[in-house]
Image 1: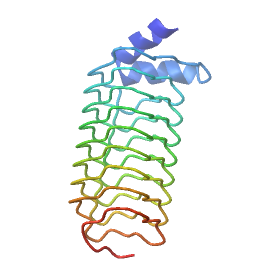
Image 2: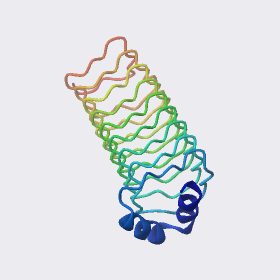
Image 3: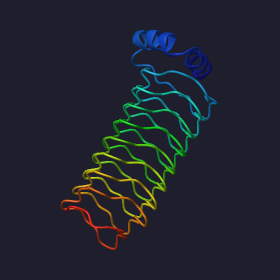
Length: 201
């Protein structure tokens, strides 16, 4: 099954989705596979195991990765614009330079992930676990990060203009030199957080 799934993934979205419609309950394991530079934009990738897979430079825009497992996956420069990643697990995933504009990451677990220089404009991160993420120089402009846990997150030089972080936990979060113009922090836990500027609260 692993080899067959890898071949289908390489062929692209159309053949993958046809197979998936006929095998909706199949458990797909693509862990540790080299899937770099593949284009499966719009594919149904729900619940797939991508642990430690190489997805660098792949196009996963508008895919459905709900409840997928991407622990320690290499997602450098991967396109995930408008992808659905609700309840996905991305523990320690490498997302440096990835594009997640408009992505839906509700309740996703990104604990320890590397998001340096990634783009998450208008992304939805409600209830996400962002504990200890490295998001230096990342762009969260207009993102919804409500009721999320950003404890220990590194957000130095991040862009958070007009982001909504209401009711989120920012315990010991580092926002040195971050641009938080217009950001909302209503009822957020800011204990020991490092903030460079005043925001609306």
